[in-house]
Image 1 (tube, rainbow, N blue to C red):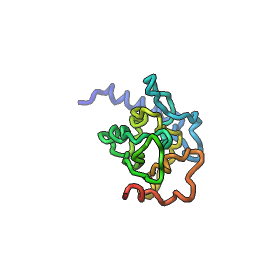
Image 2 (image 1 turned 180 degrees about the horizontal axis):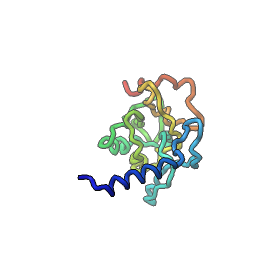
Image 3 (image 1 turned 135 degrees about the vertical axis):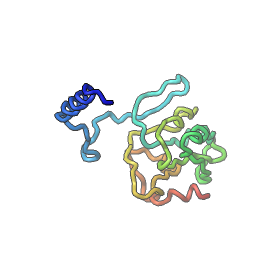
Image 4 (image 1 turned 90 degrees about the horizontal axis):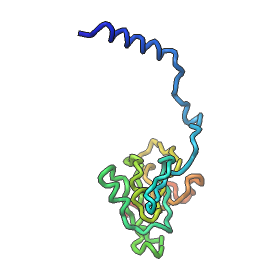
Length: 166
């Protein structure tokens, strides 16, 4: 049996919240106002810096293709796929293996960034990734290497799935 005091407490709580102002944001018309700092992890110090956990940024010249980011992601969301990009030649990455990310599966936990010993992978404040086409949520290594403020060059638009199929 429900006690009358419980009913009175529920009514009291409902009336109190009736006059609170709404907290719904008119996103994307109104920006959040939060500082746009990158989330990153320093493996030497073992310390993470606070920031947004948005789209990843890949520094191709630092990536060695060690696949630690992919191994870490396998047990969580399996969003990182290592792809071979033979046209990209870097001395430290002999196999030309680079991570590509399927944002339809990514949970933005940041563990891939934390495990990268070469600080090649970062998370950016770019959080506007929603799209009606699921295929557009796949980012190749070349797309991940573009800083988020610059945008995607026209030669990369529509070239997402080709890298994963090879």
